[in-house]
Each structure stands twice: as C-alpha cells, then as structure tokens.
Length: 328
Ligand code: NCD
Image 1: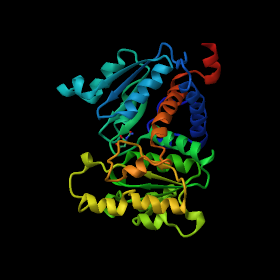
Image 2: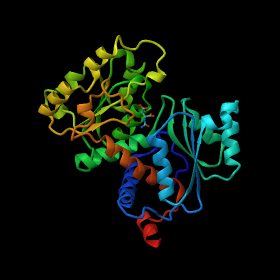
Image 3: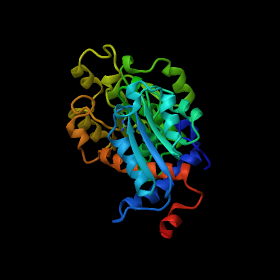
C-alpha cells in the first residue's frame, strides 16, 4: 500500500482495508506485551492537531505513535495560535515548517483535512472532519466486528441507529463495511436523516429505515441483524429542534432495556457498538452499554491497534511489522 494520506474511507479499496486490519492484528499483540514498544517509526514526528474535543481518538493516536517509537506531540486549538485568529493554513504551514512527518487532524469543518493535504508535504490523517468522515473509526469498528463475528463480514447485516445527519462515523462506516461485503441498514427519525440519503443509499448499496423495531425484529432470518451500532445524539451540532423531547427519542430510537431484552430473544449475544462518547439514558441504556455483548471498550482497545496499523502503512517502509518488531 503506497498511500500518503488517509482523508476518506473511500480512499481505501477492499484489499487496502484488509491489509490495514491484518496489520492491526499484529499490532494488537504488541498491546498485550509487557514492553509495548516497536522501533518502526523511530525518528518520525507526528502532530495531533485537534480543533474539536476528543478523548479516545486523540489519546489512541498518541499512544499508537509512542508505541511505535515516533515523537508525538498534541496541539489543541484552545492552546494554539488558532485561538488568536491564525488561519488554518498558517497554522498547518507553521507546524510543517518544523519538518513533521504526519498531521493527524480533527476539525469542525467538513473537508478541512482534504484542504490541508493540499497545503503541506506531510501525511495527513483525518481524525474527524465536521459531519463528513472519520475513517479510522470505521476501520476500528470493522476490526472489532470481525473479531466478534468470526472473521469475515461478507453478508453480515449491521444496523446503524441514531443521529445520522450529524454523524461522520456513519458516513465512514457505510463505506468501509460495504467494502468488506457487509449489508448495512441505517435507522433514524426523518429529521435526523441526511437530505438526499435515498440516492446515496442506492449508490453505496445500503438500506434506510425509520422504524427501529421493524428492523430489529426482522421476520426472515436473512434480514436479522448481526450487530447493532448506536450513534450519539450530537447536541453540539444541532441548531434547532430535531425531535420533540428526549424521552420521545429514546422511546423510538434508544437501545432501551426493553428493546435490548427483545433483541436478545431474537439474536442472543448480538454485539452492541457505540463510538463514544455515550449519552447514557438517551440513545443507549446503561443495561445495553454494560451488557456482556457490548463491545464498546473493545472498540477503544482496537482503536490503538488500528491507528498503529494506519501509521505503519502511511509512514513506515514496506517491511512486515513482525520483522521490525523482532529487529528491536
Ligand atoms: C465520534 C466523533 O467524534 O466523531 N467519537 C469518536 O471519535 N470516538 C462520535 C461522536 O462524537 O459522537
């Protein structure tokens, strides 16, 4: 794989997704070692430039870089000259004048990472741009699902539920899961469906629905969900009223205790995913978040391995990671 940037999930063909997930598997083994260090990215400098808040994504990119011996530095917009009015172009050009090898960027403007990639020589990795995409999240979700569903996602039915209008996680996931041969159904109230989703669903081959219980209760075994991914209601991106009350949203679209019990009766032990951060009691009940089939913390753990794999494929040479590990 000879690619410089990871800007969109659409950049990755199926064999590239498979290559990253295979590498992530070796990286996951490193996580289980007592000494978590590979020399792979020694001498490389990675800047995490985050203009939006983040717990999981930023820390896992930082840990991933550190475990591969890169020098990783975090810059948050609040503590940078961006808060003094510096333009994004000036900020990234200034950082790149210090000879950095990669910029991991999260920004509230959709398309910001594509724009930055045109301004700098460093590798640019999209860690979430507005409501557009979040490609490493989709990779870690696929990695987690493959682990739970026995390897291949071909023909598996993944149901994604929630605030689709504002979700970059959903946008990247329909692409990556589609690449891996999964069937995807997305469910949201009409007000939280992105406009024009019909044409887009037809093009990318996913289904849309408004009635969550109908989808979860699929009559034919072939339609039964194999996994359900709940998405956060993104209040910070909402300017108006998208649903009458929170209680009504939960009743129609939350993974409540009652809905979970019903779902388990149809598909016992169905994996439950959520990219975090969760609004417990709104889109997901505590019973579902903490259920034995919940893989929410596995997603977090996979996030480090997958981000190590992405950094490896973008920044390292062509040697297999296991050989590099042994060379240490
Ligand atoms: C997501 C994000 O920031 O897009 N979270 C994450 O990266 N784990 C989803 C969200 O904020 O709801």
